[in-house]
Length: 133
Image (cartoon, rainbow, N blue to C red; front, side, top):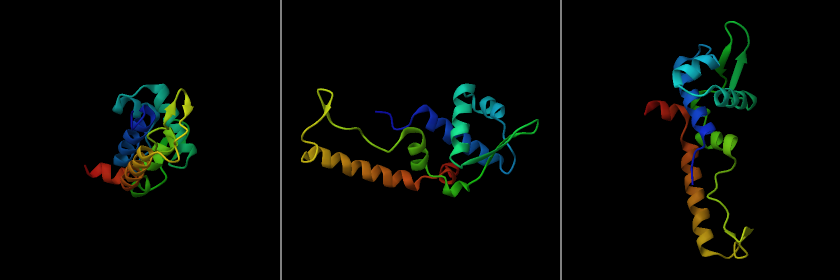
């Protein structure tokens, strides 16, 4: 089980880097070079962040991306949801079907509580708090 996918990781790294350069525009090429990230993934990640309202972009010679939201408002939980979907430890499967006991299973109730605690913690992690570390 991976908590973070490559796109979420790249998004966090890019946002931290951009926040350190704010209010300056940062080009995709600069991010690729400075963070040593592959171009196709970086561009896809930046486009998703722009489409979701985290970034603004400008085209042209001096183009690039800038943060739209303050770093205190960019939460890790929201980035995970954007790139991975809801925080979930997975569904209990039996023979490729959802387990019939899912509603009464004591183990499933424990897993749901763990998911809720993890999500609560992830909501408290922001780009600003990561920058302080």
